[in-house]
Length: 413
Ligand SMILES: *Cc1c(COP(=O)(O)O)cnc(C)c1O
Image 1 (tube, helix red, strand yellow):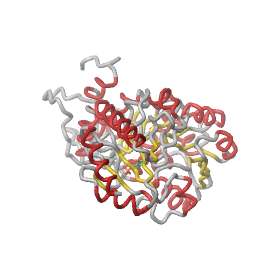
Image 2: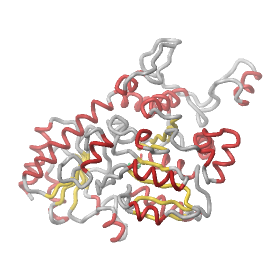
Image 3: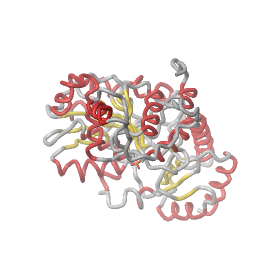
Image 4: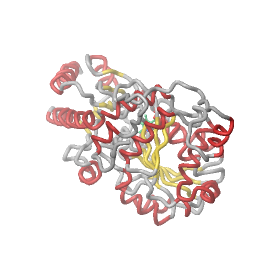
């Protein structure tokens, strides 16, 4: 093995996890094998006992998926990463590894709609209570933490509200309460946000988005940053596992849940994601540049636009301190009415109207009539979903083409 220690992010994104001494392949091979054979029954038994390293069955582990996990962990500078079948699977698995019936979670109000559904429709059924708080209001967070609170869950940038959570401040509140902070950082990929440096205990990404980059995969990853001492965790389940695994208890719990529940990543998707990660920092730089340019253009046109990189964004300072000065690839636009939004979207030529983000292609959606359909008015307002709001995931096309497309569509409204 070559020495790949101390490489910078861009280099690790290309080299970490690649280890094919047998053939010298320059991409991690796709191991399409449900199970892995051993010469002797003694060897297989030793692998089962954990005395010998090896893969057994692809629901438990798979070499291609393991390579992806190594690459992501190397980018996050974490303890270990685990890849699963979707971003939702990553969120659900991380949370259920810690909480059980009778427990309580403190979560941000401005989180992804699917996560709100998980909290309200699934976790509530197994007697897990969630208190929704404004992630920018420290007093509200403190007041929401109870005896049976097991964790705090926030997103780096709310979607579509685009409010920015001060991860460092919230991590201090979590630390005082002796509970882990779980951060969904999907909107701020690891090339612009390092959860470990900001104090997160666990960082989650829907790899469907920027990590894939081409909109060809549904996937999720989670990383234990090493910031939280799991041996001291209040969770009964984690305490039980910590007896055997010590501070690796969280990763141990997640690995066994992924194995037992079966929400695994496929080796084919892992291979696509390994390629996606190679270009992550380049792409994200362009997403951020294009989003900044488009936001400035829309602002000059006199439109109501929200973008974390603009100087009028209320948490603009956090863009510098938390995201290396990069405002991300998402912006929102308010056009005065739902009818105006629909007309505008219909007239766009390049931008695609669909429910995804973080793709090389520019994507738009009217959240109120799609992702947030059926949500009650109060929840929608708290999540920043208005009837006249369009969410834009700015792609990597030439900025002149994106601006020209928006300009011609806006003339029609
Ligand atoms: C898309 C998304 C998710 C869910 O991820 P899937 O891969 O679609 O399951 C979770 N959080 C955020 C912020 C997202 O954008």
